[in-house]
Image (tube, rainbow, N blue to C red; front, side, top):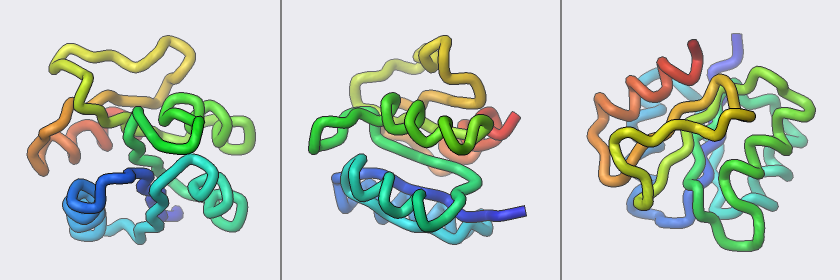
Length: 119
């Protein structure tokens, strides 16, 4: 099973933290700062997980990015992170196998959200 994680985050400090956690959890990580770059990466690879900021530059948000990727990878687990979420945030109903995570978060919370998304 692939352990490739696609990380989409435009804030370098947050991306570095998430990348470190994902790598320590055994994932190979590919990073993108926007939706268009993430789509290009996903076209060349088949990620087993996506962790994406909800608010991305360039006109495509994290939820729409997941929807687009799921046209080819329908059960792709997704973690949507945002500074606008609260602790009770739930993913949109049309995004099964997804979890929401409010910034700032701890390592354990990220790993829990990944486990929830992977079902």
